[in-house]
Length: 404
Image (cartoon, rainbow, N blue to C red; front, side):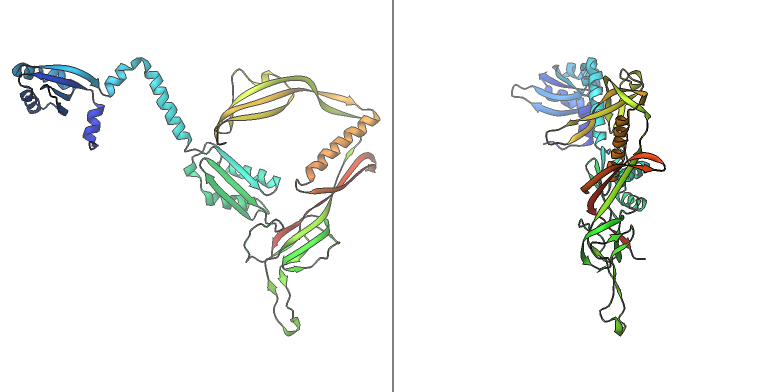
């Protein structure tokens, strides 16, 4: 294999020809060309006495005619090559070639950018807060992966969300994954075992089970505790206190389960302003590029309905192994609504208040809680009739509180 040098690369890119030399004195022709400064390369001698050689087009046009006449040789062009020759040959396809190069460059550049951000772990409100912090830091799809500081993200998210004691940040290709841990111990969360702390009640609850792995239980089972009450203390009293041995501070660990009661109510009204579906629907499509929606000029939402509810389904370009490109289509189904004042019958008024109270109650109950009992009644609150609903849920209520 020929050695690659700057000179060889320059020869390949320059406009040159491959010529055939035959006649009485081809060797003398070559010597004269070299003496006149003609750049010759890839010289090959064939069995019939002819030579094949490469030379630049400008030399072929201006420097070899007199040498050919003097040596009685004929020079025949076999092939033209070089960057300029290729461009001229495909001049009609130049826009396609340029477009292909630009697309290839854009694809290569896109792999240096962040495609998606995923936050997991912790509570729902913590995930929302973490996404907001990342957005304020400029960590959004489209930023350079090299500009992302993993340590800065971890420290900023941890300090910005109360109750989050550990934040894991990982960059996998073009995807950023952030994992939150809120410092609870019943789920096996790994935390610093040398940090003294108590386990306290996250909410008002009726304690049903306490399993202490480390620390001192200060509240018995089957008792009521208020939010913030210490359940497993990190202060361990000495066994032989009478002899003056000092107390120790440890990292309290354990499982605490309790029954938490959630409630909600809505006043029973004779009328209400409500949105109702008219039955009319329409679809609006948007381009998705790095998480951003780009509306198509012929699909503008404001030109469809004035008031509407919507459901959006996003479809990304997906490979056979499940990996996705940050490009796709978002299809938004619009359902027209109308704002009206509705007069209720007594039965409809109760049903409407029930639906409103249930929706509020559902938002209060954690996703991992187990509902064990529910109930409802119509009661008088502040002199007005209201639909009151409640639910009792079994859930983990122990959270860490550092000992200052």
